[in-house]
Image 1 (tube, rainbow, N blue to C red):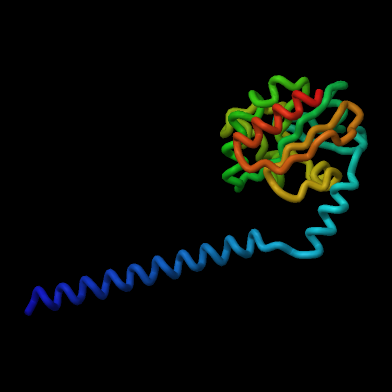
Image 2 (image 1 turned 90 degrees about the vertical axis):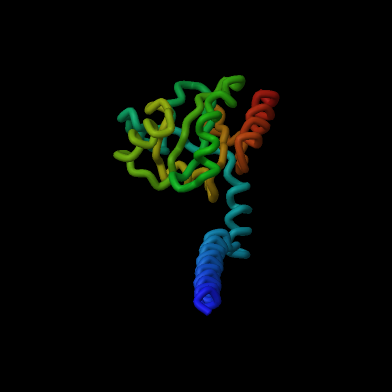
Length: 188
């Protein structure tokens, strides 16, 4: 009789545990759905406007680097094309791209910069150190993201030395980054 009761109690506890797991999964799916929910016409309008951006004023856009530089973006590029990887600190795909970013763009004569969205300039140094990036290549500028109308991370943006938009690619992973870098190198 006792083994039957113990079996029933164990079965009940297991059923409760499965119920809790199902509830937590449903909650996570709901949170994910909210984060990725399309905003319909608003998103489409933003994409159409983003397609219109073809040049930014490198003297007007101010940036701050983890190395302590604060000033116009033109001073960083020094007459070279600029490859900007827009990332977010919370983005797992972004973190997977960081180790291969500079190597992937090595064939293209552009200055590879990482722009951390939402980071304060005081957080940039720790971000650069954590991901093994050179501090002078890690920068923050919400102004730049707005000027280029970057809506999602990770996004790779290539600008020529005059600030003309050459390419904007929403990246899905390291292999996509490599393909985008190859296309950029071939176009140069």
